[in-house]
Length: 187
Image 1: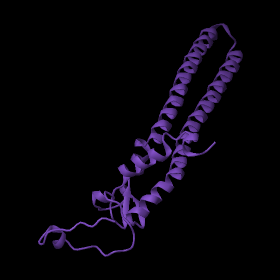
Image 2: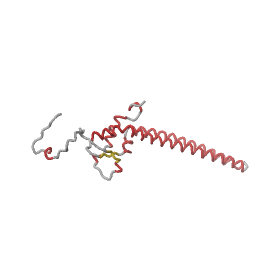
Image 3: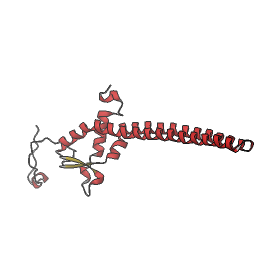
Image 4: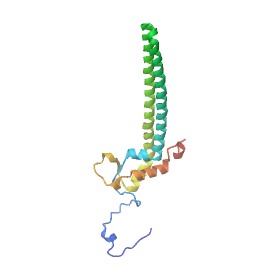
């Protein structure tokens, strides 16, 4: 361990010394009992979160394109049905119109279910990210001597130095990368 001597009257003498708690702290880390983090930013700015968001956006784009195609097909079918109306008996037309309405409702239910599944992908990605990030966040807590990490949004007032979001993103990216399974030890 290196010792550095300071000249008499230096800032080192003037500054009060923190009690030695026995814990080794790293330079550049906040030394606070309470840390804050911005969970949305943690996810969205991490490589893992960005990959997950790209995948979800791609699924959403596929669904949007499918919805447009289906909408065009249904519109054409509706126009064709409307065109046939004048040459049909009212009861026959009503049966076809009811069948068409059922088809539209069932299609809407299927497409809504696909949208719910895409939203669930996002929720699952966030849960997976948080679970995989916990060891990194716990390590930061140990290194800083903190007893808790709070959501930055729920804290009334804190020093900017207590926010570890940027540090956590850097560390999590080092450990998880973009979250592909083989990068963090899963099959």
